[in-house]
Length: 212
Image (tube, rainbow, N blue to C red):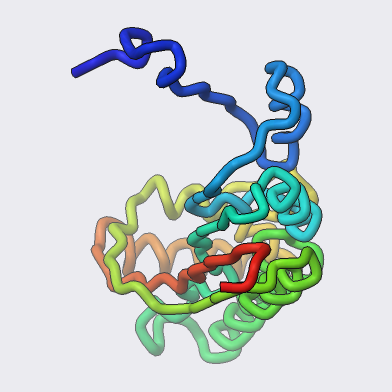
């Protein structure tokens, strides 16, 4: 296999590492000012960004007039609900109802950037940026997930990031410490080392600045 360094200089790829929100500064720091692209593609490229509208504007500025953007984004707010994985009767009904309410509150958060957007927001942001040829499609992809002991432990671990509370920190807003531990043990007993269906909602985005 040919190493990139063995290619002619004009064919050698330039690899820049960093978040998309920092991309204009990263490009400038590598003396690549004025750089533009025929195509920009990505998988969950917007996932870690807090101001997606601003990032989309940055991408538009890096795109040539005839270029296009093609992205695939996982819709985290449509993730499988953990409480729904427990068998009926695993918890007292009152506790089960409060667990469901506590978990649903995670996905209804208006401040957590992982969950406070959907396809309609992407449509709005791309349109406002000036993309006239825009195709956004959402679909469900089937899959499976092995629930490991380490995964369950991570769900019930406190997180220092107050902007992105962990699962257990959301539960603590509604449930007592004793109730949280009861839920924790139910997860360990029923889910640990089991492979379960894990459907994922993804959004396909194809956009260009010129009409298609």
